[in-house]
Image (cartoon, rainbow, N blue to C red; front, side, top):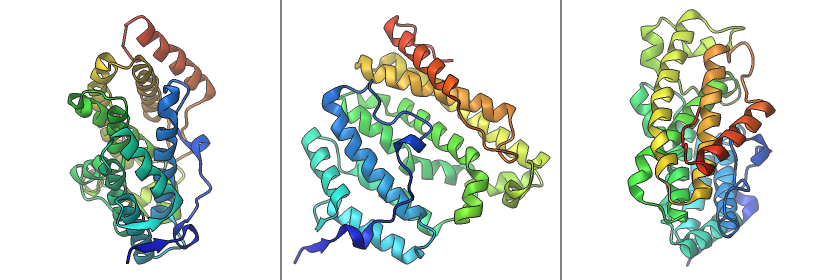
Length: 287
């Protein structure tokens, strides 16, 4: 008999929504026919991420609920509004179901793994927690999968930048640190340093090393903006890349331990205008 799940058995809301994101979620730049698919994907990802981050759930409870999401997404069970909606959306759009289940793999890892030994471990997490988002958008728009590496670079950069923004909050609220432990040890720092009033010299050096990684990834992502066939998706990507570079600059100049470092309204306006110009006139250079 096929298992039937109820939403109230599984859901665990964090209260976050699209307005809490650093980067555009299904903005007006996405063509109208694609927007329902983007919404279904975002709603699924937000709900599953909430489960992985829910402080009141045990690791086993999180894993059980995320497995229920996977079963419904892959047609092995029924019920659960958001995975059912995403399954229908992906099948209709011809996008692999793995674009959703890869995310579930990462969120399941969040349920049991709270420390990262190295940059390689962090990049592997980003491969499943962030990169599927860009791959989903490329598949949805019928773009060449040869662009996956450039898309992956941008998505991984965004993920690491968010980790740097939220390092203190993540440790305080869910006892999780994504900072590479080998780098911390090399610099004479500890993940607990993010709870201080300001970043220690060693922690600052680790953050700067991660920002160097993000700078290289952002450079690689430039190929995405230049080679997309969809002008709308190219504009969306150009805006996001500009925002990533602006957040990178703010994190380079400010201390995210002393206070939250965030993009401003002016950043969004400037990145939006610049991204539109990049694609409107073929400049395709993000700054």
